[in-house]
Length: 187
Image (cartoon, one colour):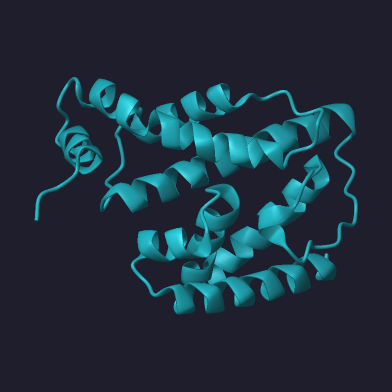
């Protein structure tokens, strides 16, 4: 079985080949932009970050100084989704601390996390805290949430990226939604 062009470019990047980053970007750009556009569509309308800027910032974090090691295409996209999440959380924290004095607001967890339409900065910050706890509690469920919510993947796509059955992915998704909802309620 031969590796696809994205996997080959990722392996070249991992070996430190000088032009690997330039070869990888055109191969992954459209998918990264799609992920960023999906994520930003769920952000509040006053959000100023554009999909292109989010993609470029995430890409720089992924392939910048000391590029990470990826186990393939799915792992790379999961890392990209995580980088985008961190960028959006950092922007929300800056906005909360600068414009609103950092005040916290109680937020109810949306039953359908993947379809949430307009997350405010406070929602994103509360979700980030809960996600950090979920990552420590259940890394598999955390990875699935990253791919579904921040990566914009369907259950089937996320299952394939994680190398699990769709049934297992659905079970993790149900558990993660309930766990996050309970955790956000506690706060």
